[in-house]
Length: 213
Image 1 (cartoon, rainbow, N blue to C red):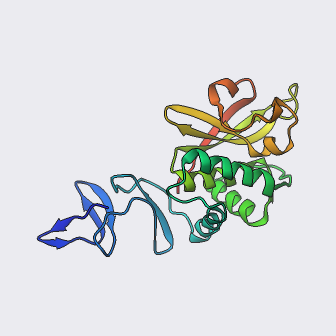
Image 2 (cartoon, one colour):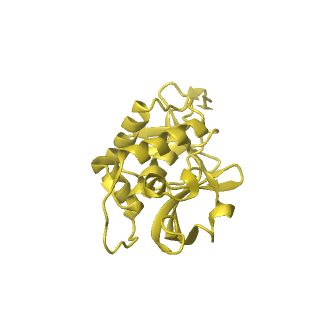
């Protein structure tokens, strides 16, 4: 990583340079990617600049990292490989448990992700939250949880549903672990479908929640 010197001495810890925040390790190297300081995980871009984010509790990070480790997903794993592994993991490991009267109150996505990753049971909203956070943790790509309606389970019946969208390059793609597990439609094509081909035909988005770590 890059080192920064001030008056001939190597800078360590938090530092603000030209209005941007960086974190330098004990050896003076600028941190990039995910780094946990105290009980909080932070994300730094390739230049080491801290990205605006919400604080996330250490328990959720620890749970996610355990899953990534079991899947042999590291910083050097290609995004495409990591996403496929995590999509498969969520499809196989999670079971459906209906939740009545879902309301997206502030911070719901953190709670739902933690519940699903811990109990392995939950609604389509739990499914979406869990996969979204794992995907964000593993890749750092723009990830959002979508809430709206879908005909994923019955083409003639639009029902309340939650799914995930991830931006790769300039294109948003849909990911639906819940439909992948339970729907007999679309011949299993629920992984990485172009949003432009799905919106209005399979999904009708009402609200999106950007996943921040």
